Length: 164
Image 1: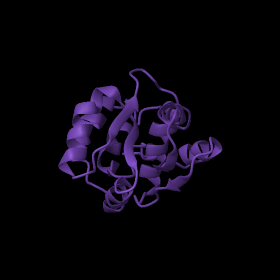
Image 2: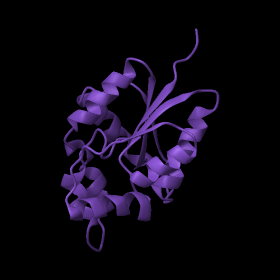
Image 3: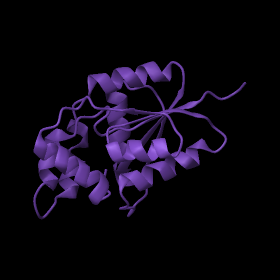
Image 4: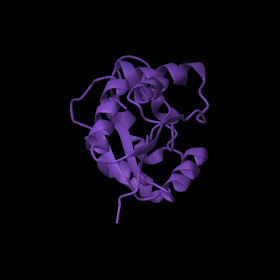
């Protein structure tokens, strides 16, 4: 029996709507503890959840997120509560503050050893470009509407502060 190809799915901005907690990291000082403590309250993003379900019918899912390892319990409970298909959960290592465009491709490279990556789904345009540059097919998740402030804040958290 051969293994199915992998579909890599991001969480924040793809299946989970994080906009309600961005206010914790807009100003100074940033309250990262409160930002991550609000994970259980993330509303689901219907488009992303539908896509994850479609992909799971054909591929082995791997959720690759820039969330720190310390949020694994809340993240896994959120995925389960919202009926996402089962899949491996790969998270940013503790104290890894590299931009998502650097950290996530490294995580996917490790997963891809001996496996075909059929698709990567991410909301961060810089991550998408890095994944394409590594040779993987990409779908840019653009369904989480952003106002100017939330878009800037989320990109800063992902790329500038290496936090999600």
